[in-house]
Length: 286
Image (cartoon, rainbow, N blue to C red; front, side):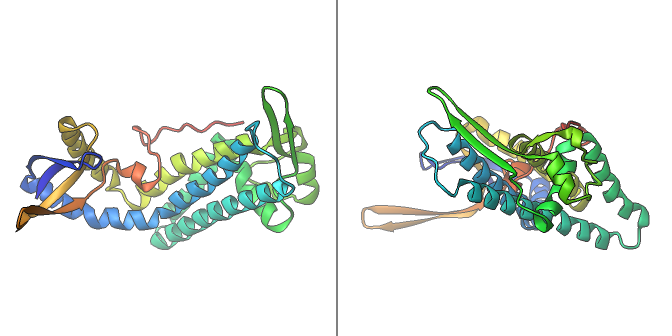
C-alpha cells in the first residue's frame, strides 16, 4: 500500500512513499471503527443539513431582492419542526444507547445525565431547546411571531416567541427554568447557539464515549494528509493498493489504479466539531 497525493482537478497523482508496517496495521485497526462511527454519527450530518435548510431560508428573507410569499410562516414552522425532530432523535438515540451500553454500571449511566445538566447550565440556548422541543410537539407551533421589513438599503427580519405565551401553555421548562423575565426569545440567535452546542460539545461527548479511539485515528490520518499535501497542497490523501494495471490498445494506453479513500479530516467528515482540548467548552450561559 502506498501513500498518494491525488489531485482530482488536474487528474494527477503523486506517489509519496510506501506505507510502513505499523501504518498498515493502524489503518486496518481503525477502518471498522471509522466505518461504525460514520454510520452512527450520520445523524449529526443529517441535523446539519436541516439547519442549513433553515438558515438558507432565513438568509433569503434577508435578501432585499427576495419576494415574500404567503406561506412564509408555514415554511418557517416546517423547517423548525424538521430540525427539532431530528435533534430529538439524536438525543433519544444516544441516550438509549448509553443506558444500554452501561446498564450494569450505574455510575456510568448517571454520567450522561450529569453531562446534559452541565451543558444546560453553561448554555441557556441548549437548555431552552431541550424544553422547547416538547412544547412544539405537544402544544403549538414554534414560531410565535414573524415580521419582515424592507428598507432601501437593508432588510429587518424578526422570528421569535414570547416567554409569557410559552408559560401560559406549558409548565414543563425544567432545563431552562423559563420565566417571564426572559421576554422575547429570538429564535434565529438561540437556534444558532443550540446547533453549535450539539455539533461541538454534545457530538464530541458522544464520540468520546462510543468511539474513544477516534481521536487517535483522526491524528493518524491527519499526519498522513499533511505529508501528502506537502507534495501537492490541492490534493487529497489516498492510499494506492496493489500494482497499477496498464492496458495497451493500439495507440491508447489505459492505467487502472485501485485507490483506497481514507479520512483526511476525520471529525469534519463525520460532521462534528471537536476542539483541541476535549474538556474545553465554547458554550455560554444566557
